Length: 161
Length: 161
Image (tube, chains in turn blue, purple):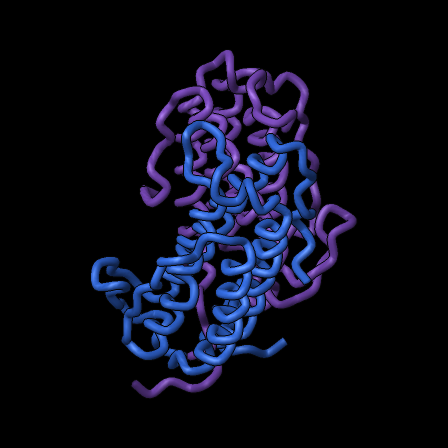
């Protein structure tokens, strides 16, 4: 296969990255749904934050990170009143739509430019984006333990559709 | 900045991917080290697998996945006798060295070729590699909960050096 070195040095394209991330976000949505309403903001293990709080953190990072990468505007999630599973899921779906709209607006060269996210985190854009995805996978893994401790079978990790 | 569409469509290069992964693996190593010897293979929450068993699963996937992607040979980890923190850490460091050696041998076009990993998981190579990294982050997040439940402060998530 004849490819130039530049073309070949691609592990993942922007379209593939977004699809990979939205696959994770579909799974995280199922984990949020799997929590009983009364446990989402009340239950945890080892004095950690309940999964509802972790989900709000994820909401505060995902769409705002994509918006910042695309536009240079860094917004803060208004966390007031996000106190039910239904509200978390509604914001989750709104973020999904906005991320899909904003993503193609990230200039392709931006991924390797150094930016300062949220006015304080400096790094190459691809690294900051990976951090947000990894942070989601990290906290969702913690949600799996909470669900197991509640006697609930979590959704399968490998299903992303 | 003048870049061709092909060059620009890069979120992450192979070198960046390996460094990102090894950063995660350095953190996971610290999580393994943070477990008291007696808890690594005995303690868990919600009837899940202890973190030692999860670490052995990670060992069985990381280096063998890179070897398979580089050479087409799929090897199985010999799990017998991996029953102490010291042995897990020794195998971890051996994997680190081997992954660094094998990685540059993955032909660049391979990342977007469809392969069958371990004789059963079919997908584009980049997707299979991401799965292995995500699986590590997922299980390590569970290890954080185990450590907190043991009253141990886990290593900071954002430190990767």
